[in-house]
Image 1 (cartoon, rainbow, N blue to C red):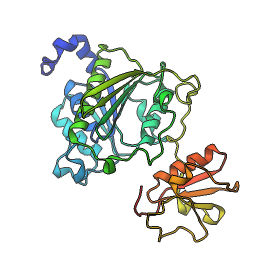
Image 2 (image 1 turned 90 degrees about the horizontal axis):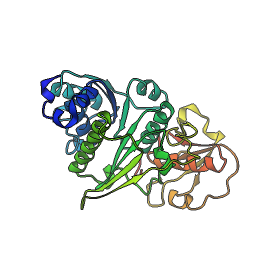
Image 3 (image 1 turned 180 degrees about the vertical axis):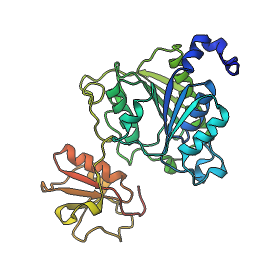
Length: 337
């Protein structure tokens, strides 16, 4: 057994170290959570690591994404991350995936790994990872951050899944992205380190694979641990379906005839609406629309906003009411989200 791991073997045991050196882990997202997570897993001797991220390194990432430096700005996170990890541990296999995780490629990629860890920063990827892991019966660790709050879920699809407690994400006006809400780099480091520790404990059979939710408040370091209970009507771990938001209702303007749709602009009254998609569109502000849906004719509906987040949510909301609704994939680039 490799002598480089002699400091952790007294705790993990030789069998535990053997398990690490004979397992494969896929990390989704090489950002604030994925950076420390991947570094510690590579250092522990995981046999095969996969790192998937379609995004490029930005200057605003560097205060928390410790896998990168200023020289990496503008380069793909997965490709650069793998190079850095190989300098840490040249004895393991590391596979980069410089692409977005989608319903089209998720199964093919997941099939190659024994444990999936999601450190992504968006609900679509989080729910997609959950749904595909339930279909393939793969264990999942899902780590996320909101401001100073950390949430880490361990998912055993045979017990319960993420959708059992959170069937769908909250409205986009409730939870902001870190670019708007803010995040301290050390919070990301704590989340990634704990996720790595949980993964190592599970792989080494020091901790049983259960479906639990850990919440940590990094302001006062209080925490709570909840047991996830199976929802007998869960669309994911029970019915094995992939549903919204893992499935998107986005369409491209160039692929449709816009006159065939009722067009709804859901930007707020205080946003710049000088640019409009069509002149005869309806304007229903998002904050009002989610409180009460107006009477609409049962015709195909196209919803748009400034960046596509709110319009995607409204399209889903309309579909639950029986409408054939879609969200414009490339939206009007103005203020808002």
